Image 1 (cartoon, rainbow, N blue to C red):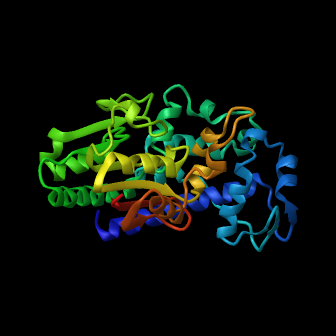
Image 2: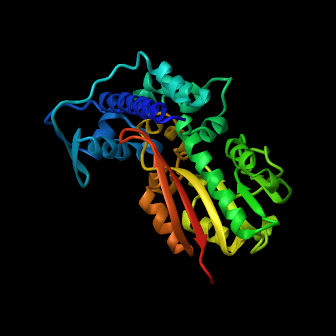
Image 3: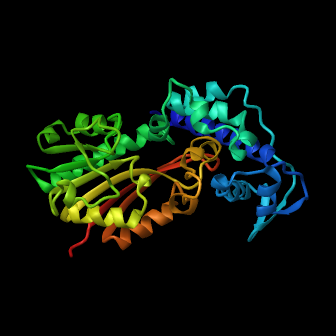
Length: 334
């Protein structure tokens, strides 16, 4: 992607984010100068208990754009409330390269936010028969921008392989549709022989299944069995990020390298669409208290706590949309 094309993509992603923020403000019935409690707003809107976690996340996103001012459980609406038309949203999504299932859900969800909050309609209902929950979650946060990070990942893996020398044992976690796999093997075709493709349970697209939330050894992945681990757009599904990173550390030899990409921080388009798919069943607990996409700083902290030295961090994205992060880290000696 050229610099000009990336600039257009960033502008497009920002436009989609602003439409999403305006839709949040409308669904929350924000009025300039009004002070309210978060809990009171949720009650007045009839928000279903399992979606309660979304209201404070929406308000945090709006606070980052100076629409509201937060003080604990109270917020005050500042200045003008954002207004944006969703008329050309399908065009923007197409231009950005959003996966079709994700774009379709976002378009439909924006028209039904009050009903979604009240659980009168579910995000799964809006997907329709031609889409699946699993497919929407797999594409959550992906766009043409993530292709830039895929290429950067591929280059980092190539360099890691040169440092290790043959044979280089690579384990890819959650290969999914194979976008990152294709980028890595295009640049390093000689890795194929010792490349273990894995996927998440329920998506048997790879050669092996590895659940990042379960013990790796019990699933046939022994300690020190990999020189390089690649995880593209996968690890945000971990229930306990630090525990999963510790398992990855054990999978690597000392000095082994981890290259991962992940969405980081709240993303307005996801908050108004696919995040509804993360709401628990009645009585259940939401993933990590609602932090579906941990921040870049949280990832850095978790990597260090798990015994990694962070060597490289890159990101793409705009202030009003998901920031996709890349981390390159090395397992420190025991």
